[in-house]
Amino acid sequence: MAEKKLKRNPLPKGARRRRKPVGASTGLAAVELQAAAPPSAVAELHQLIETDGGKVLSIYRDPYGGQWLVQAALPINLVEPTPYQRNLSDTHVRKLEAVIGKIGRFLDPIIAVRIAKPDHAAKYWTPNGNHRLSAMRTLGAKSIIAIVVPEAAAAYQILALNTEKAHNLREKALEVVRMYKELEQF
Image (cartoon, rainbow, N blue to C red; front, side, top):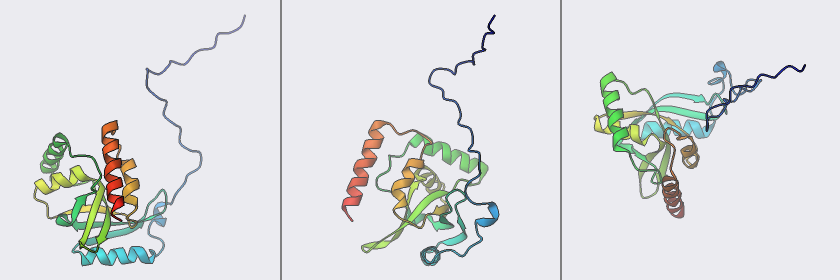
């Protein structure tokens, strides 16, 4: 008589199985993150941040892809959201204000890129961190910690990493229209 195969319990509707980690490690080891001298573009960004009134805290390579990044304290008045990201959620900002104020610490750096245009002083756009920026402004912060990505074009790619709250179709369309309008100016 044939033995019956035990069936796995099916996952609830809509749930997915977690992917297993890749067999081999990838990226850089911890000791490699600062092992080499940064390229000239990153050294120039370091100088520009300090000229703008900021303070570079660290220059390192991303552990996964190996790209160079700069962690810096930026004057909060020079930081603004990208012109094409979704609108602020007042509820989310209020929650962040309450938590940051309660614990007395800002522990989640924003992502920023430096934007220099001929018609105004340099600004730092945050494609990921607008709610945290707004909360820090309301709390009266003078500066904000940011991971500054040297390539300004990365601002258009970083929005894909903003998965905290899934974008609905309307928000996605609004972001695309805003991006298009911003790119038209170049």
